[in-house]
Length: 253
Image 1 (tube, rainbow, N blue to C red):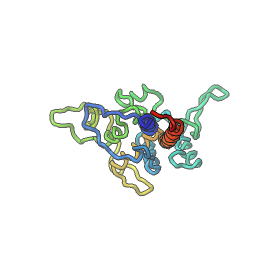
Image 2 (cartoon, rainbow, N blue to C red; image 1 turned 90 degrees about the vertical axis):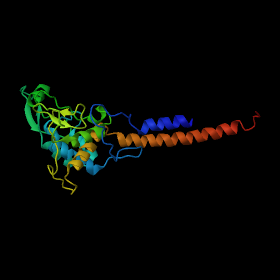
Image 3 (cartoon, rainbow, N blue to C red; image 1 turned 120 degrees about the horizontal axis):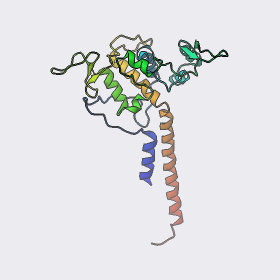
Image 4 (cartoon, rainbow, N blue to C red; image 1 turned 90 degrees about the horizontal axis):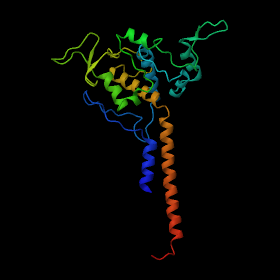
């Protein structure tokens, strides 16, 4: 019974573990506030991470599974969410005359994609299709450390004996080390209003936290539910043990 309880609790509070992919250096093993059975998201980091995404990453990468109203989970008020959504121009329609039209974004709208379609994205990026980031930390083994490592793993030059084609960059954590994405972050490229450090490391941590939340927004609820289930099963097992002792107390073996 104890083994069953521990197994159910572990499955309830922990996502499936993945090994790091091969081909690059071993990924950094960073500490994240959302790790472990009691882990939670840092709301400040989530808002800073969204700022990094909106000001840097969104120029190339979509997040098609998120709506602007989802940002309320980051601590934004309804008015703030409306203001964020209204900054974007959305193509809607058709109208009564059968024509498409433009309007300001609404909280119910999905995040606006940077390109009209995949072909347009490939054309602008030399044939490479920037991946959608909605589920990136779930789609990659050791997702959070993968994203953090990729953002911090760029090196100025390829090692001796290695050649980079035009539009390629050397990243020590990338499988094969060669990547078509230019280094997206550097120190002091985004100003934080809360006084947090404006360093590459801080940017990478914040956007990693945001992307992890985007891929698993229900994580905190799932963990709380898992802990409650574990406690319930523990109490239930104890009660059943006491009932069994009472029923069989007069039976001689």
